[in-house]
Image (tube, rainbow, N blue to C red; front, side, top):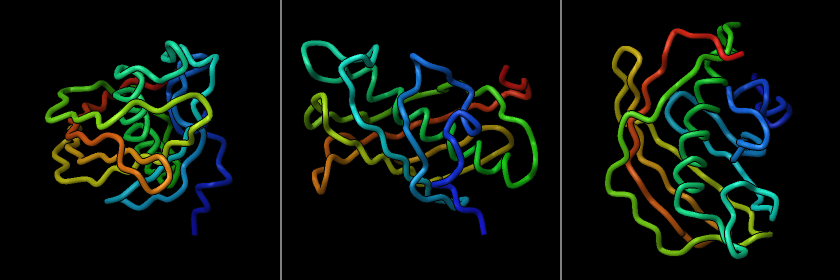
Length: 144
């Protein structure tokens, strides 16, 4: 059984500091993946004490990257570069403040070839603060 909580996040995603918007994978299976991230003042997507909408989009995208990193880890493959193909129906109920821990969950709706369509939900505690539909394209290029 894969204990994803013990895998260092940088082994699962292609992003590197200061561009990392997930701290760890909390849960993983091929349909649903959940990550956590504590918003810190030094985060490049924090302005005036709150995470920007761009940071929220990147948090969802990196949750998708972490899911694929887990798949690659299981298959003993290297981490691949991915790209946001589309973001639809992104809704921000509010932006999180420095010190809040986000729990981001994605559910795979469809996966065809190297394209994945997910529904995403970002929570702070029990409060839903953002939702979206995102399409991610995975390349065959290894992350460096």
